[in-house]
Length: 101
Image (cartoon, rainbow, N blue to C red):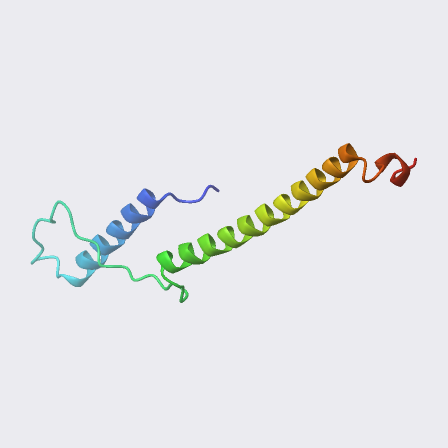
C-alpha cells in the first residue's frame, strides 16, 4: 500500500479532530461545524544539531583546506616538471639515461 502524502495526513488529522469534537459535545447542543478548523501546532522532536550557518562554515573550511592542499601539490609537481625540462634543455642531466624500459 502506498504511503500517505502530507496532504492526506493533514486531512486525516482534521477528520479525527472533527470526530473528537462531535463525541465530546452532546447531540442536542451541536452547532454547525466551522468550515476550516485550525490544526494544533505539532512539535517535532529533532536531534540536537548545530545551526545551519555553522555547518556551512565548517563545510566551507573543509573545502578551502582541501582546495589549498590540492593546489599546493599541483604547483609542486609542475615546478618539478619545469625544473627537469630546463635541466634537460641546458644539458645538465640526460633523462633518457634515468628512465629505461
